[in-house]
Length: 266
Ligand code: C2E
Ligand code: CA
Ligand code: CA
Image (tube, rainbow, N blue to C red; front, side):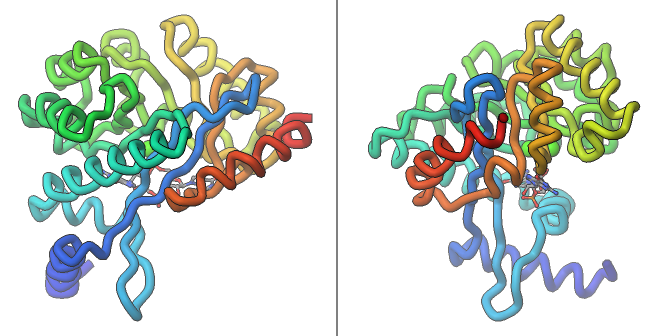
């Protein structure tokens, strides 16, 4: 993007954050063996009044570039944890996953900050999983101290988009992750592309060997889901199960999904 339009968009983004024009949607993840809801991943949305939506893959990197990631993360985490409480008050007992920009992890205080927000909003830390991808410049291994602090506090850690970027087998072994999210790229061609099948099965086995939960993202077809079950992948997420939904529609999705599940899994 050219500098001027980019700066205009950033100005608009700051105003949107101030005016409360961002909102969060939540995408369910379910256990493949039972169809049970395990948690919901919070995803930010920005709808520009009269101008349509801006994709998070466009404005999150801009927020990083212009020093706005801290207010975005703080707002997003508070919104997500407040939603968790609303679900709990409705009798929906669940967990949430929240995406963290690699940039936030550069501050050693960040785990304390997350814990403080959990305490303030009375959400047990073990109900929260943070999803992390590697930044372009920073292998996650450099963040060992910060990541360990999260685990000591009981917060779960998922490595997102696994198999792309810099994520190496060594990092998976050395860092205190609890979950591996297999990138959509590998799920997309299941079960027809032999190489994707081999890679996905290997990642699931690797995750299990290291005591981690294996989650497949971007699951769109029943064939993909059934292949994932055949290789004992633990958790599925994707449009087949649910599109990201508004907090208020979780209850009706749960009811509907319980009826759909037997047909999906076959
Ligand atoms: P991600 O964490 O890998 O999130 C998954 C993306 O895939 C989401 O796009 C989701 O809507 C989309 N998706 C889910 N199921 C399917 C499917 O079955 N098929 C296809 N084709 N797509 C699917 P979204 O919401 O546009 O988010 C894009 C990225 O932006 C996210 O990738 C994440 O890295 C980042 N992001 C989103 N929300 C936040 C946030 O609150 N904070 C931060 N730091 N990053 C965020
Ligand atoms: Ca994610
Ligand atoms: Ca992902």
